[in-house]
Length: 102
Image 1 (cartoon, one colour):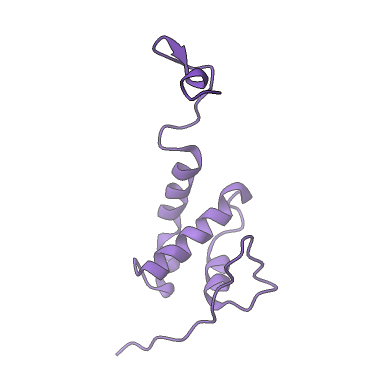
Image 2: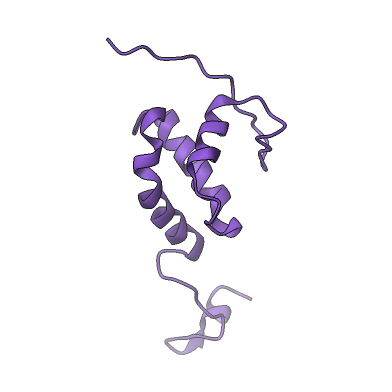
């Protein structure tokens, strides 16, 4: 049977500071996510991986297998499902900015 190891609890405050916080889960995820991923998205990728692990989507020892998929999810979340939109974009007889009251 597979043994589970007990992980130290994760800090609840963002931004997480792995060098300063003794949190096994955070350190494992932070080490697995490539440093080449832009900082604008890297924090979201790490947080989304941690959420997947906590929800039981996959175990912590499989985090490396799910990085590419989580990067894609995080980019979609960052840009929104429809990409970047301009407030001056026309939607019918008014602009998007007018439609949302900006």
